[in-house]
Amino acid sequence: MELARRGIPFLVRAGVRFFEQAHIKDVLAHLKFIQNPQDELSFKRVVKLVPGIGAASADALWAQVEQWLRMGRDARTHLDSLAQLVPPKARPGLQALGGALQTLVAMRSQPSEMIRCVLHEGGYGEALKQRYANAQARHDDVLQLADYALQAESLEQLLADLTLLDSLEAEDVVEGAEPDEKLTLSSVHQAKGLEWRAVFLIWLADGRFPSAPALRVPDGEEEERRLFYVAVTRAKDELYLTYPMMQEERDQARLLLRPSRFLDELPAGPPPYEKWSIELAPRPELLEE
Image (cartoon, rainbow, N blue to C red; front, side, top):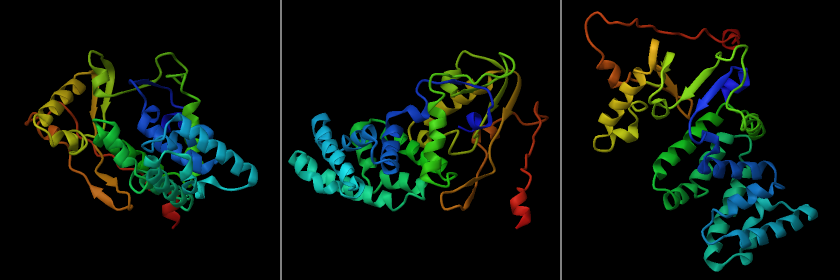
């Protein structure tokens, strides 16, 4: 997202991009409908997440919503009154969704909290458990989306930023001045068998690489160690092993991070590498304050 905004040429080596994954689209559909109550596709995607609501029930609900739109009535705050249009087993879920949408309308200036509301109060966390074997990983993805949304000043701004990505869906590369002048983004898995002149391995903090979920399963740490070996051997000439010293939490508190245990395992003695500490210059607005 940031590379696209800054006009930095890049190539993405991955299967499905983060914002194109089904569970991310599900969450964003809630936000899009709150922003635009005339968004039929987002509305139907959201209601079909309710157990017992299929395409036919979603069509019936949307037909009523269209009538309300012509009358000037807001479906976002009255959805729970349409329970008679869906099968009995779907009614509790629809009523719960209606309540969640009312809450989301009141939170439009806080897109990050809206995403957390969809996950928790809106019941999407439970839906993940029912739909996916890797529910915890997808749950973590949604929290990552919420963290990203912290930088958005409004729901409108967040969705506008996502529109920027939509314009790049058909293109993996933003062209630079020269054909080879681009940054390649890759997971470690996608990088197997490939080499680059310079490699930056990012987020080498304990809990991120190795990841916290991997450390909770047998042999998880050893598998992460093998991936670390794959990553560091992708570089031909230059290798940068990086980690942040701090991470800003959701409540804006700062958490001190520990370097990855894999960095501690690097050979002792005179190292074949230099150790750098990079500090950001203070922002001008902070100096003014």
